[in-house]
View 1: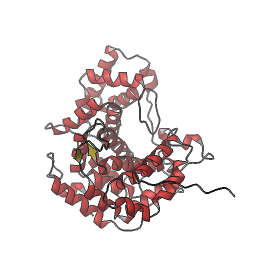
View 2 (view 1 turned 45 degrees about the horizontal axis):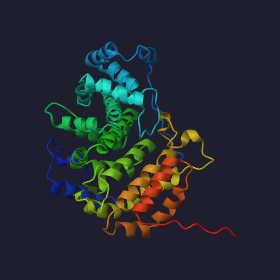
View 3 (view 1 turned 60 degrees about the vertical axis):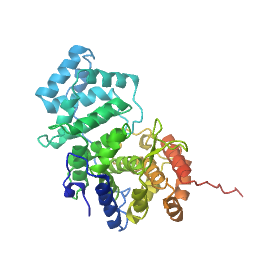
Length: 377
């Protein structure tokens, strides 16, 4: 099986042809049965060490407060990383955050004005224990979310000698996919996946870098493994952005008058031939779909971070990935249709959860599929 680290992952981007061949090789190998995350499988909640964080957070957000936070990161990285994440979260503990509050944006800006995010990236280095890397990944996600300039800067720092970034996040993902990975390693991988998702959604350069470092193979590996639902969810969300084409438009979306700037046709063709991948994504949709009877606390748009082990959080991301795989004029769309993908996406499009419904409808549009409702007799 192909793994990015086995190809001698280097700081410099490999030629696109070599990266593409490696990705295609990965897809041609795993054609076994799907590895599903069964509803009966239990994943423990992520431990949250408050350690007087709430009292510490009441000190305000002024310059002295920021100086203390930076000092903690420099002198006690374990405590400083916990305090930084607590600060950036701004009390928002949702599992899936597509947007950040004005308060959170202000805290992003305040931390960045202190020119301290290199401290966060250094925490990803090999000298750091896994729980510190985990907090660093979580902080990167919170800093890059809905902030294109920051996402691009964080990606560019990956090139600075002695600095760390996307490559180290992907190594964390690979570690989490290994059989026998402990809970800390799995949780760190989950945060790394979400950080990569935040980075590739803010910068095409980050997309290119993530692809060259083997991120597609890493995400596919997670989806086909028995990883936690949160890991599978963010792996599928990353895959959506890594396999679709991009155009010379403000958001990279398709336009008949715009030039295509990134062509992922060959990757999609091989992805749709990976039976295990497609069936695993299908299983995530079927197992994860919520209904009105599902407690709101388990809906992906409402779930908090302690629902990392709930299968109900996965369907929206899997739907997005399937839509992206079938988005080109390369025959992938027809192959997905032959496998009955449209039918379960139509069911998901009627989900009471807005996130599931939106992603399913978007995927159906990319697949050029219509949902036919049966008449009531």
